[in-house]
Image (cartoon, rainbow, N blue to C red; front, side, top):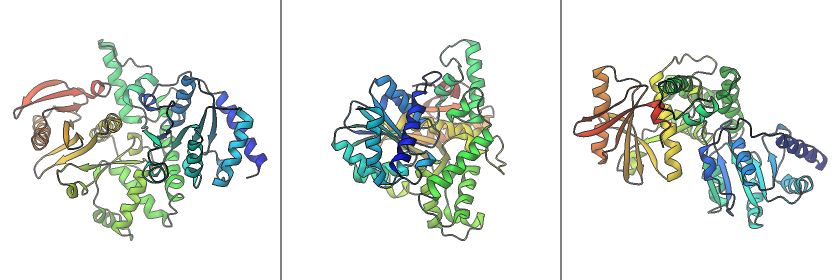
Length: 426
Protein backbone atom coordinates (compact mmCIF):
# COMPACT_ATOMS: atom_id res chain seq x y z
CA UNK A 1 0.00 0.00 0.00
CA UNK A 2 1.12 3.55 -0.60
CA UNK A 3 1.86 5.85 2.33
CA UNK A 4 -1.08 8.04 1.33
CA UNK A 5 -3.48 5.09 1.33
CA UNK A 6 -2.24 3.91 4.73
CA UNK A 7 -2.56 7.37 6.25
CA UNK A 8 -6.12 7.74 4.99
CA UNK A 9 -7.15 4.40 6.54
CA UNK A 10 -5.46 5.07 9.87
CA UNK A 11 -6.88 8.59 10.05
CA UNK A 12 -10.40 7.28 9.48
CA UNK A 13 -9.89 4.62 12.14
CA UNK A 14 -8.79 7.34 14.56
CA UNK A 15 -12.03 9.20 13.91
CA UNK A 16 -13.99 6.02 14.55
CA UNK A 17 -12.50 5.51 18.00
CA UNK A 18 -12.98 9.17 18.87
CA UNK A 19 -16.68 8.56 18.40
CA UNK A 20 -16.56 5.51 20.66
CA UNK A 21 -18.74 5.95 23.74
CA UNK A 22 -18.77 4.17 27.09
CA UNK A 23 -22.55 4.34 27.14
CA UNK A 24 -24.16 0.91 27.34
CA UNK A 25 -20.78 -0.84 27.55
CA UNK A 26 -21.02 -4.01 29.60
CA UNK A 27 -18.04 -4.44 31.98
CA UNK A 28 -16.29 -7.74 31.33
CA UNK A 29 -14.77 -9.88 34.07
CA UNK A 30 -11.64 -10.34 31.94
CA UNK A 31 -10.84 -6.62 32.12
CA UNK A 32 -9.13 -7.22 35.45
CA UNK A 33 -6.74 -9.67 33.76
CA UNK A 34 -5.28 -6.95 31.48
CA UNK A 35 -2.08 -5.47 32.94
CA UNK A 36 -1.26 -2.24 31.14
CA UNK A 37 1.40 -1.42 33.74
CA UNK A 38 3.33 -4.51 32.62
CA UNK A 39 6.15 -4.67 30.08
CA UNK A 40 4.48 -7.77 28.59
CA UNK A 41 2.29 -7.65 25.51
CA UNK A 42 -1.34 -8.02 26.60
CA UNK A 43 -2.99 -10.47 24.19
CA UNK A 44 -6.80 -10.74 24.19
CA UNK A 45 -7.92 -13.69 22.11
CA UNK A 46 -11.24 -15.31 21.33
CA UNK A 47 -13.87 -15.99 18.70
CA UNK A 48 -14.88 -13.21 16.33
CA UNK A 49 -17.49 -10.80 17.70
CA UNK A 50 -16.98 -11.85 21.31
CA UNK A 51 -16.25 -8.25 22.31
CA UNK A 52 -12.44 -8.18 22.28
CA UNK A 53 -12.13 -4.70 20.76
CA UNK A 54 -14.75 -3.23 23.08
CA UNK A 55 -13.03 -4.73 26.11
CA UNK A 56 -9.69 -3.27 25.06
CA UNK A 57 -11.16 0.18 24.37
CA UNK A 58 -12.84 0.09 27.79
CA UNK A 59 -9.61 -0.86 29.56
CA UNK A 60 -7.65 1.84 27.74
CA UNK A 61 -10.18 4.57 28.47
CA UNK A 62 -10.26 3.65 32.15
CA UNK A 63 -6.46 3.57 32.33
CA UNK A 64 -6.05 7.17 31.18
CA UNK A 65 -3.14 6.19 28.93
CA UNK A 66 -2.69 7.85 25.56
CA UNK A 67 -2.91 5.24 22.83
CA UNK A 68 -2.89 4.69 19.08
CA UNK A 69 -5.06 2.19 17.26
CA UNK A 70 -4.90 -0.02 14.18
CA UNK A 71 -7.73 -2.35 13.12
CA UNK A 72 -6.22 -4.97 10.81
CA UNK A 73 -9.66 -6.47 10.16
CA UNK A 74 -10.36 -3.43 7.98
CA UNK A 75 -10.78 -4.78 4.45
CA UNK A 76 -8.66 -1.90 3.14
CA UNK A 77 -5.69 -3.39 4.98
CA UNK A 78 -6.27 -6.88 3.58
CA UNK A 79 -3.18 -6.62 1.37
CA UNK A 80 -0.95 -5.08 4.04
CA UNK A 81 2.29 -6.91 4.77
CA UNK A 82 4.91 -6.90 7.46
CA UNK A 83 6.82 -4.33 5.41
CA UNK A 84 3.96 -1.86 5.90
CA UNK A 85 4.08 -2.00 9.70
CA UNK A 86 6.97 0.39 10.23
CA UNK A 87 5.36 2.91 7.86
CA UNK A 88 2.14 2.53 9.85
CA UNK A 89 4.01 3.24 13.07
CA UNK A 90 5.44 6.45 11.62
CA UNK A 91 1.96 7.54 10.48
CA UNK A 92 0.50 6.74 13.91
CA UNK A 93 3.03 9.02 15.59
CA UNK A 94 2.04 11.73 13.12
CA UNK A 95 -1.67 11.26 13.83
CA UNK A 96 -1.64 10.63 17.59
CA UNK A 97 1.53 12.25 18.83
CA UNK A 98 3.70 10.51 21.41
CA UNK A 99 1.38 7.75 22.69
CA UNK A 100 1.98 5.42 25.66
CA UNK A 101 0.25 2.30 24.34
CA UNK A 102 -0.34 0.77 20.91
CA UNK A 103 -3.56 -1.19 20.36
CA UNK A 104 -3.27 -3.67 17.47
CA UNK A 105 -6.66 -5.22 16.65
CA UNK A 106 -6.84 -8.62 14.85
CA UNK A 107 -3.09 -8.62 14.34
CA UNK A 108 -2.97 -12.22 13.06
CA UNK A 109 -3.99 -10.96 9.61
CA UNK A 110 -0.50 -9.56 8.99
CA UNK A 111 2.30 -11.99 8.07
CA UNK A 112 5.29 -11.96 10.44
CA UNK A 113 3.54 -9.47 12.75
CA UNK A 114 5.37 -10.95 15.73
CA UNK A 115 8.71 -9.53 14.55
CA UNK A 116 7.19 -6.05 14.68
CA UNK A 117 5.66 -6.65 18.11
CA UNK A 118 8.91 -8.04 19.47
CA UNK A 119 10.80 -4.96 18.32
CA UNK A 120 8.28 -2.62 19.97
CA UNK A 121 8.50 -4.58 23.22
CA UNK A 122 12.27 -4.19 23.20
CA UNK A 123 11.73 -0.44 22.86
CA UNK A 124 9.54 -0.46 25.98
CA UNK A 125 6.23 0.42 24.27
CA UNK A 126 3.12 -0.95 25.96
CA UNK A 127 1.15 -3.20 23.65
CA UNK A 128 -2.45 -4.39 23.62
CA UNK A 129 -3.11 -7.02 20.95
CA UNK A 130 -6.23 -8.93 19.93
CA UNK A 131 -6.61 -12.00 17.73
CA UNK A 132 -9.24 -14.50 16.64
CA UNK A 133 -7.02 -17.53 16.31
CA UNK A 134 -5.48 -19.56 19.13
CA UNK A 135 -2.42 -20.10 16.92
CA UNK A 136 -1.33 -16.75 18.32
CA UNK A 137 -0.84 -18.48 21.65
CA UNK A 138 0.21 -21.95 20.58
CA UNK A 139 2.39 -20.89 17.67
CA UNK A 140 3.64 -17.40 16.95
CA UNK A 141 3.62 -16.01 20.48
CA UNK A 142 4.97 -19.12 22.14
CA UNK A 143 7.80 -19.29 19.61
CA UNK A 144 8.73 -15.65 19.15
CA UNK A 145 7.59 -13.89 22.34
CA UNK A 146 8.51 -16.53 24.91
CA UNK A 147 7.67 -15.16 28.35
CA UNK A 148 6.87 -11.71 26.97
CA UNK A 149 3.09 -11.82 26.72
CA UNK A 150 0.06 -12.13 28.98
CA UNK A 151 -2.78 -14.11 27.31
CA UNK A 152 -6.42 -13.31 28.11
CA UNK A 153 -9.13 -15.54 26.63
CA UNK A 154 -12.50 -13.94 25.96
CA UNK A 155 -15.72 -15.83 25.31
CA UNK A 156 -19.11 -14.34 24.40
CA UNK A 157 -21.08 -12.85 27.31
CA UNK A 158 -21.41 -14.80 30.53
CA UNK A 159 -24.96 -15.00 31.86
CA UNK A 160 -24.15 -12.27 34.40
CA UNK A 161 -22.91 -10.00 31.61
CA UNK A 162 -25.95 -10.88 29.52
CA UNK A 163 -28.18 -9.78 32.40
CA UNK A 164 -26.35 -6.44 32.57
CA UNK A 165 -26.78 -5.96 28.81
CA UNK A 166 -30.49 -6.76 29.10
CA UNK A 167 -30.84 -4.65 32.27
CA UNK A 168 -31.96 -7.66 34.31
CA UNK A 169 -31.23 -7.60 38.05
CA UNK A 170 -28.78 -10.46 38.62
CA UNK A 171 -28.61 -10.20 42.42
CA UNK A 172 -31.97 -9.40 43.98
CA UNK A 173 -33.64 -12.35 45.78
CA UNK A 174 -37.18 -11.03 45.22
CA UNK A 175 -39.69 -13.23 43.45
CA UNK A 176 -40.00 -10.70 40.63
CA UNK A 177 -36.22 -10.55 40.10
CA UNK A 178 -35.86 -14.34 40.15
CA UNK A 179 -38.62 -14.64 37.57
CA UNK A 180 -36.90 -12.04 35.38
CA UNK A 181 -33.62 -13.97 35.60
CA UNK A 182 -35.34 -17.22 34.66
CA UNK A 183 -36.88 -15.51 31.62
CA UNK A 184 -33.47 -14.09 30.71
CA UNK A 185 -31.93 -17.55 31.04
CA UNK A 186 -34.43 -18.97 28.55
CA UNK A 187 -33.48 -16.22 26.08
CA UNK A 188 -29.78 -16.83 26.78
CA UNK A 189 -30.11 -20.55 26.07
CA UNK A 190 -32.05 -19.89 22.87
CA UNK A 191 -30.31 -16.84 21.38
CA UNK A 192 -26.78 -17.21 22.70
CA UNK A 193 -24.37 -14.69 24.13
CA UNK A 194 -22.65 -12.83 21.32
CA UNK A 195 -22.74 -9.21 22.54
CA UNK A 196 -24.51 -7.88 19.44
CA UNK A 197 -27.35 -10.37 19.95
CA UNK A 198 -27.76 -9.53 23.64
CA UNK A 199 -28.58 -5.86 23.18
CA UNK A 200 -31.95 -4.21 22.54
CA UNK A 201 -32.74 -3.91 18.84
CA UNK A 202 -30.39 -6.82 18.12
CA UNK A 203 -29.96 -7.90 14.51
CA UNK A 204 -31.72 -10.97 13.17
CA UNK A 205 -29.96 -13.87 14.91
CA UNK A 206 -30.07 -16.24 11.94
CA UNK A 207 -28.51 -13.75 9.51
CA UNK A 208 -25.95 -12.62 12.08
CA UNK A 209 -24.79 -16.13 12.97
CA UNK A 210 -24.79 -17.30 9.35
CA UNK A 211 -22.57 -14.37 8.33
CA UNK A 212 -20.30 -14.80 11.33
CA UNK A 213 -19.89 -18.55 10.78
CA UNK A 214 -19.04 -18.04 7.12
CA UNK A 215 -16.46 -15.37 8.01
CA UNK A 216 -14.76 -17.68 10.50
CA UNK A 217 -14.75 -20.67 8.15
CA UNK A 218 -13.52 -18.67 5.15
CA UNK A 219 -11.23 -15.96 6.52
CA UNK A 220 -9.98 -17.36 9.81
CA UNK A 221 -9.53 -20.94 8.64
CA UNK A 222 -9.72 -21.76 4.94
CA UNK A 223 -7.67 -18.78 3.75
CA UNK A 224 -5.32 -18.77 6.72
CA UNK A 225 -4.45 -22.46 6.35
CA UNK A 226 -4.78 -22.50 2.55
CA UNK A 227 -7.24 -25.40 2.54
CA UNK A 228 -7.66 -26.65 -1.00
CA UNK A 229 -10.79 -28.74 -0.46
CA UNK A 230 -13.39 -26.39 0.96
CA UNK A 231 -16.44 -28.64 0.63
CA UNK A 232 -15.47 -31.48 3.02
CA UNK A 233 -14.13 -28.92 5.51
CA UNK A 234 -17.36 -26.91 5.55
CA UNK A 235 -19.45 -30.10 5.63
CA UNK A 236 -17.58 -31.31 8.71
CA UNK A 237 -17.81 -27.93 10.44
CA UNK A 238 -21.57 -27.61 10.01
CA UNK A 239 -22.13 -31.27 10.93
CA UNK A 240 -20.27 -30.88 14.23
CA UNK A 241 -22.15 -27.70 15.07
CA UNK A 242 -25.39 -29.56 14.33
CA UNK A 243 -24.70 -32.51 16.64
CA UNK A 244 -22.52 -30.95 19.37
CA UNK A 245 -21.84 -31.73 22.12
CA UNK A 246 -20.37 -34.93 20.73
CA UNK A 247 -17.42 -37.26 21.27
CA UNK A 248 -15.21 -37.36 18.18
CA UNK A 249 -14.67 -40.53 16.20
CA UNK A 250 -13.16 -39.51 12.88
CA UNK A 251 -13.68 -42.83 11.11
CA UNK A 252 -17.37 -42.86 12.02
CA UNK A 253 -17.76 -39.23 10.94
CA UNK A 254 -16.04 -39.88 7.62
CA UNK A 255 -18.29 -42.85 6.87
CA UNK A 256 -21.47 -41.12 8.00
CA UNK A 257 -20.80 -38.07 5.83
CA UNK A 258 -19.42 -40.15 2.91
CA UNK A 259 -16.27 -38.04 2.79
CA UNK A 260 -13.28 -39.10 0.74
CA UNK A 261 -10.67 -37.55 3.04
CA UNK A 262 -8.80 -39.51 5.71
CA UNK A 263 -9.50 -39.46 9.45
CA UNK A 264 -6.20 -37.60 9.89
CA UNK A 265 -7.41 -34.86 7.57
CA UNK A 266 -10.65 -34.58 9.53
CA UNK A 267 -8.63 -34.32 12.73
CA UNK A 268 -6.69 -31.44 11.18
CA UNK A 269 -9.95 -29.71 10.25
CA UNK A 270 -11.20 -30.01 13.83
CA UNK A 271 -7.90 -28.59 15.06
CA UNK A 272 -8.43 -25.54 12.84
CA UNK A 273 -12.02 -25.13 14.10
CA UNK A 274 -10.74 -25.12 17.66
CA UNK A 275 -7.93 -22.73 16.79
CA UNK A 276 -10.54 -20.28 15.47
CA UNK A 277 -12.56 -20.75 18.69
CA UNK A 278 -15.61 -21.97 16.80
CA UNK A 279 -15.38 -25.21 18.80
CA UNK A 280 -14.18 -25.91 22.32
CA UNK A 281 -12.82 -29.36 23.13
CA UNK A 282 -12.43 -31.18 26.43
CA UNK A 283 -10.74 -34.51 27.14
CA UNK A 284 -11.95 -37.55 29.00
CA UNK A 285 -10.57 -37.64 32.53
CA UNK A 286 -8.09 -40.39 33.26
CA UNK A 287 -5.04 -40.66 35.52
CA UNK A 288 -3.20 -42.03 32.45
CA UNK A 289 -2.06 -39.38 29.98
CA UNK A 290 -2.40 -41.58 26.88
CA UNK A 291 -6.06 -42.24 27.72
CA UNK A 292 -6.75 -38.52 28.12
CA UNK A 293 -5.75 -38.05 24.48
CA UNK A 294 -8.61 -40.26 23.23
CA UNK A 295 -12.26 -39.47 22.80
CA UNK A 296 -12.22 -35.68 22.76
CA UNK A 297 -15.64 -34.08 23.19
CA UNK A 298 -16.43 -30.86 21.33
CA UNK A 299 -18.89 -28.04 21.98
CA UNK A 300 -19.76 -24.85 20.07
CA UNK A 301 -18.35 -21.66 21.56
CA UNK A 302 -21.90 -20.30 21.75
CA UNK A 303 -25.31 -21.98 21.71
CA UNK A 304 -26.52 -19.69 18.90
CA UNK A 305 -24.23 -21.65 16.57
CA UNK A 306 -26.28 -24.81 17.14
CA UNK A 307 -29.22 -23.76 14.99
CA UNK A 308 -28.98 -20.21 13.66
CA UNK A 309 -27.50 -21.39 10.38
CA UNK A 310 -28.95 -22.37 7.02
CA UNK A 311 -30.46 -25.85 6.58
CA UNK A 312 -30.31 -26.78 10.27
CA UNK A 313 -32.94 -28.95 11.96
CA UNK A 314 -31.41 -29.00 15.42
CA UNK A 315 -34.58 -28.28 17.38
CA UNK A 316 -34.56 -26.91 20.90
CA UNK A 317 -32.14 -29.44 22.44
CA UNK A 318 -32.51 -27.67 25.78
CA UNK A 319 -30.37 -30.18 27.65
CA UNK A 320 -27.49 -29.81 25.20
CA UNK A 321 -27.81 -26.04 25.30
CA UNK A 322 -27.64 -25.98 29.08
CA UNK A 323 -24.68 -28.40 29.08
CA UNK A 324 -22.82 -26.18 26.59
CA UNK A 325 -23.60 -23.07 28.62
CA UNK A 326 -22.28 -24.66 31.81
CA UNK A 327 -19.07 -25.77 30.10
CA UNK A 328 -18.36 -22.28 28.77
CA UNK A 329 -18.87 -20.83 32.23
CA UNK A 330 -16.53 -23.42 33.73
CA UNK A 331 -13.89 -22.50 31.14
CA UNK A 332 -14.26 -18.81 32.00
CA UNK A 333 -13.66 -19.61 35.65
CA UNK A 334 -11.05 -22.35 35.30
CA UNK A 335 -8.57 -21.23 32.66
CA UNK A 336 -7.43 -17.96 34.27
CA UNK A 337 -6.55 -20.00 37.38
CA UNK A 338 -4.72 -22.70 35.43
CA UNK A 339 -7.43 -25.31 36.07
CA UNK A 340 -8.53 -27.95 33.54
CA UNK A 341 -12.01 -29.19 32.65
CA UNK A 342 -12.62 -32.84 31.64
CA UNK A 343 -15.59 -35.13 31.24
CA UNK A 344 -15.87 -38.45 33.07
CA UNK A 345 -16.97 -41.79 31.62
CA UNK A 346 -16.69 -45.36 32.76
CA UNK A 347 -18.47 -48.43 31.33
CA UNK A 348 -21.64 -47.70 33.32
CA UNK A 349 -21.66 -44.02 34.27
CA UNK A 350 -21.02 -40.54 32.93
CA UNK A 351 -20.47 -37.14 34.50
CA UNK A 352 -20.48 -34.05 32.33
CA UNK A 353 -17.56 -32.17 33.86
CA UNK A 354 -14.76 -32.56 36.36
CA UNK A 355 -12.51 -29.62 37.23
CA UNK A 356 -8.94 -30.30 38.28
CA UNK A 357 -5.88 -28.27 39.16
CA UNK A 358 -3.11 -30.43 37.81
CA UNK A 359 -3.69 -33.83 39.39
CA UNK A 360 -5.82 -32.39 42.18
CA UNK A 361 -9.59 -32.80 41.64
CA UNK A 362 -11.64 -29.78 42.63
CA UNK A 363 -15.27 -30.41 41.75
CA UNK A 364 -17.71 -32.54 39.77
CA UNK A 365 -20.43 -30.73 37.83
CA UNK A 366 -23.36 -32.64 36.36
CA UNK A 367 -25.91 -30.95 34.09
CA UNK A 368 -29.55 -32.02 33.77
CA UNK A 369 -32.22 -29.78 32.31
CA UNK A 370 -34.76 -31.35 34.66
CA UNK A 371 -34.77 -34.05 37.35
CA UNK A 372 -38.53 -34.44 37.45
CA UNK A 373 -38.25 -38.07 36.31
CA UNK A 374 -37.02 -40.27 39.18
CA UNK A 375 -35.20 -42.47 36.66
CA UNK A 376 -33.34 -39.46 35.25
CA UNK A 377 -32.52 -38.18 38.71
CA UNK A 378 -30.98 -41.48 39.82
CA UNK A 379 -28.97 -41.77 36.60
CA UNK A 380 -27.55 -38.25 36.87
CA UNK A 381 -26.74 -38.54 40.58
CA UNK A 382 -25.16 -41.96 40.09
CA UNK A 383 -22.92 -40.61 37.33
CA UNK A 384 -21.81 -37.67 39.47
CA UNK A 385 -21.04 -39.90 42.45
CA UNK A 386 -19.12 -42.38 40.26
CA UNK A 387 -16.90 -39.52 39.07
CA UNK A 388 -16.45 -38.23 42.61
CA UNK A 389 -15.37 -41.69 43.81
CA UNK A 390 -12.93 -42.14 40.93
CA UNK A 391 -11.37 -38.72 41.55
CA UNK A 392 -11.52 -38.77 45.33
CA UNK A 393 -13.59 -35.58 45.26
CA UNK A 394 -16.46 -34.65 47.56
CA UNK A 395 -17.63 -31.36 45.95
CA UNK A 396 -20.56 -32.28 43.68
CA UNK A 397 -22.97 -29.91 41.93
CA UNK A 398 -25.89 -30.68 39.66
CA UNK A 399 -26.99 -27.71 37.55
CA UNK A 400 -30.61 -27.78 36.38
CA UNK A 401 -32.95 -25.37 34.68
CA UNK A 402 -34.99 -24.55 37.79
CA UNK A 403 -34.74 -27.23 40.50
CA UNK A 404 -32.97 -26.76 43.84
CA UNK A 405 -32.19 -29.31 46.57
CA UNK A 406 -29.40 -30.38 48.92
CA UNK A 407 -29.29 -34.13 49.47
CA UNK A 408 -27.02 -37.11 50.14
CA UNK A 409 -26.68 -39.85 47.54
CA UNK A 410 -24.34 -42.83 47.72
CA UNK A 411 -22.75 -41.31 50.81
CA UNK A 412 -21.89 -38.01 49.05
CA UNK A 413 -23.49 -34.60 49.71
CA UNK A 414 -24.83 -33.13 46.47
CA UNK A 415 -25.97 -29.58 45.71
CA UNK A 416 -28.71 -29.29 43.09
CA UNK A 417 -28.95 -25.68 41.91
CA UNK A 418 -30.86 -23.80 39.19
CA UNK A 419 -28.73 -22.47 36.37
CA UNK A 420 -29.92 -18.89 36.81
CA UNK A 421 -28.21 -18.93 40.24
CA UNK A 422 -25.16 -21.10 39.48
CA UNK A 423 -24.20 -19.10 36.39
CA UNK A 424 -23.93 -15.85 38.35
CA UNK A 425 -22.22 -17.35 41.41
CA UNK A 426 -18.49 -16.70 41.77
